[in-house]
Image 1 (tube, rainbow, N blue to C red):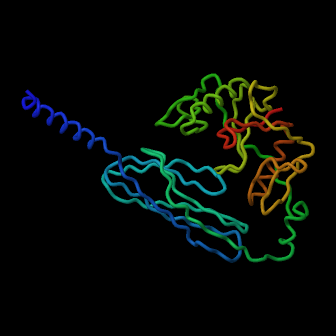
Image 2: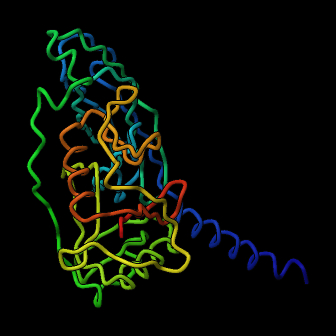
Image 3: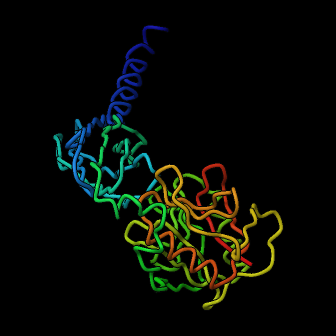
Length: 296
């Protein structure tokens, strides 16, 4: 009897392995290198990052560049019609002594991170008046004019939605915030937006913003939302300071926001905080928040 069932069993096993092979996951490899890896000279300067992404059979690959200062980068897509390699690159402009890295992060069809391309910058000394800049910035640089960069949306039609395997807060076909795989944080952000009726998201320093805030028809969100995670700040005593090679907004001995080498953006953000009287800085998802906002 066992012999009669043997051919059928072999056929089932062959079918199983055939189907398993058809669903085999694409193998993705990549690398990135900084050019130059070590720089010494006048600043600001530009570091160029050159890399490659390779696949072993046709695939759609989505990726972004990540870097040591936590700055966000857009998601890029490569459609490989066959196995092979594609070159990728990005740049980073810096105006201060700094050691850091950039890397390629694959987001789809799987999550991967490749090597960190490290680099260091040594800025040679500048004339004395520039050397004193961190000590007396207001004497040699005007305070930037207040110019706001805001995008409007409708909180009533906004929703948390899974788009291509990533959770986003969207208004129709326009996606506003990206949360990756963090569904709970996307839904909490949506509840916050709708609770305060936030209908504007504003930035300082696009396309690589160093500061973000939300408004309600040109006004600061006000009140409190049960369960929200906020820290207090005093707009009257907050100021811009140069601390440990980093421009920061500080309130007393507590630093609130960091701007790296972007002094003008730090001053712009402080003007905005004072204009709207923001006295709470709030987060969704600490210690690595996926959404931040300010309110009164």
